[in-house]
Image 1 (cartoon, rainbow over the protein chains, first blue to last red):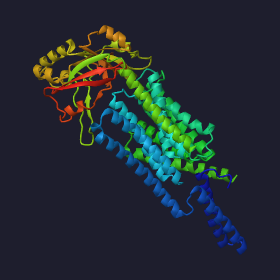
Image 2 (cartoon, one colour):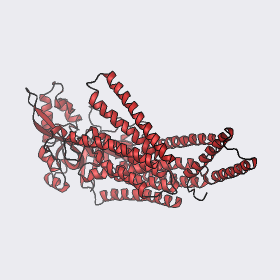
Image 3 (tube, helix red, strand yellow):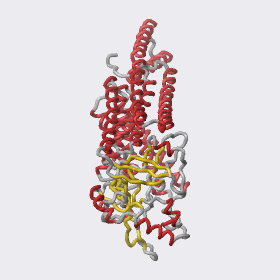
Image 4 (cartoon, chains in turn green, yellow):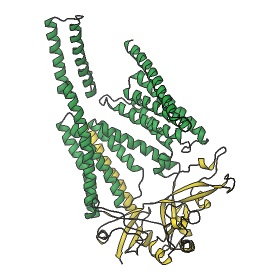
Length: 357
Length: 255
């Protein structure tokens, strides 16, 4: 087990063991492979011991029911975290008018620090990280509240720099406690910071970044590049979050620019800009699917396929909706969906062949 | 790693708060650069409810977010703050999406422009959908003087000292940082409906900051009041602006 460094890998090994056992039973029923009683006992002992060790070391789910309960716990943890964040916000707003400015300031700084201490204490007591994740989410929301209200109290004009602080804080929580939700929060904040800074450097108001969606492309592309250059040995689930966030920013920016060519830095006509970004959108989706299939990146394949379909239907809607009878429009959409299914089926078959090879 | 993460996270909290507070201290160091007294017309109460115990005011100016060429900023002023109205070859004015820009704006308090508008409103009284009406002016001179904000944006620049040199009277001109929005409006031939030219239109879309927090003890004076419109002002607020043009409430007087 020396080669297993993270919970994700441990869970994959557990799943493989379960699949192996099911297949062994099937082979025995088909009389294709029948182990002697002694072999079976030795094998079962070994597998049970391995499962026990994995469960003890990584707290993985060793049964299907445990897996389902874990999923429910993750959902409860995320929802509970969000509800606690709302409680912190609303509680502060309900009473802050009764406090003097120094007291307001003290409370605002103390809340994220207390939430951090609670996160640290809980993380030492549990291996599953459900409560840790919940408290870390509260800490993250508390810093958002802290900097937002600090600006309000002293009438400071908002700047993009707060996103840098939130991004750094999210990353510190994510890497410190192996939390994926906080990683996503941190990465999104950093991409917004980069986009707003580019907008401000180009002479615009920083909060007008959405009026130049190109400003989100460098941050999005950087997130895609990071897993290629940075190894995440102990955080095996993190590269998927980087790719997911990066692809989302890139695909959304290309989608907006493909429809609104005015919102660009490029010195071309609106139609030319829209054409460039429509082609880029399709190209990016195809690359994401191809790279996902090749390197077994589920999130890349799923998101690439979803956006390929969105780009396609968006174009068809723009071109045909106004002049085509509606039944014909939907008929064509249905036929295109069938063609896409055939293409994906071929892709799937190709992928299976590659796996076998 | 866990300990490093904790230390780094604590560091982010302390450093970000430290930087913000240094900014606040720098703003207020050396006393205010501008002091002005405004009434409820210019600083109406922000809507509050049981869920929010804070008291806040919103800085309101005349013709807020209205692209009215003759009270807003003309092409020369807009170009001075960086708006480029040139239409690249092969494009139309409609294709030009100018980014909002942050600039210094001089707000005149109850000056000539404001009086002209009141007069115009009285002349156009009764005409529905006139630009005057959209600006919130009713045409009832006495009432408008009492209820409509007296602050009018009259000039913009990328340099605060330049603007102060042009408008040195601090009791009449307030200089603030603001977000400006500009665009090209088509001018069409009334008969053929073809575009003959473009009008450069620009206006203040937001004053930075427009929400002004009222701290204790002044908040106690204002908290019993409910937001109102179209009535005589009930209070006067003394606002002081620091080096970063960030204001704070220095006094509140109930009428």
